[in-house]
Length: 195
Image 1 (tube, helix red, strand yellow):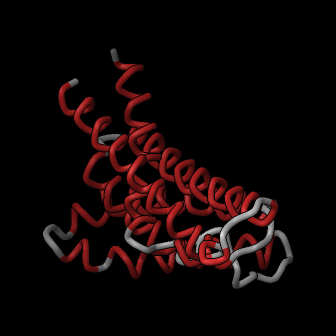
Image 2 (image 1 turned 30 degrees about the horizontal axis):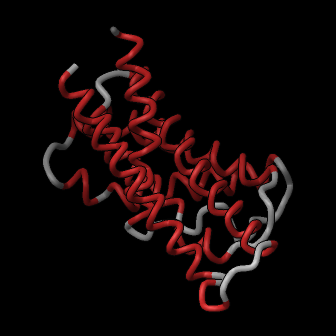
Image 3 (image 1 turned 135 degrees about the vertical axis):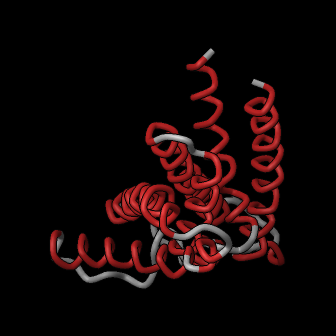
């Protein structure tokens, strides 16, 4: 039964990330970007994963023992932005010796990271659960971006009505994906709550 709960938690976290995308965080990067996925997209996904783990540990174990209450949630976004930007700068500038491009897999990774950390703080009881949730969040973000990029690619090849070309088709696709992911997320959350 423990393995089933872990699997449900993993899938739930991936589905839950679409709630963040549905609220507008990261949609701009998907709608605006025109290139194919490359190595930097995978590295940025890895940076999101590492940021979530670091911030979960900081908030759940260090900061929570010092300060409790709503103040933790007020500093969540600025710390998420600093953590993601710092890791991105460190990896791209010093390790890979590359310039950081403005066009990324997600236009606003700090917001996605902050939302992921918020959910992770409230759900994860231990390190293993935090890693599972973080992996699910990262996989969910990557999956949605991959689907949207494929829709963009197919729309360029197929006969699409003029009024749907480009951004309108992407926004409609994001809306449909959000409905599917939200329903799946709610069903899995009920399964976790019952189990």
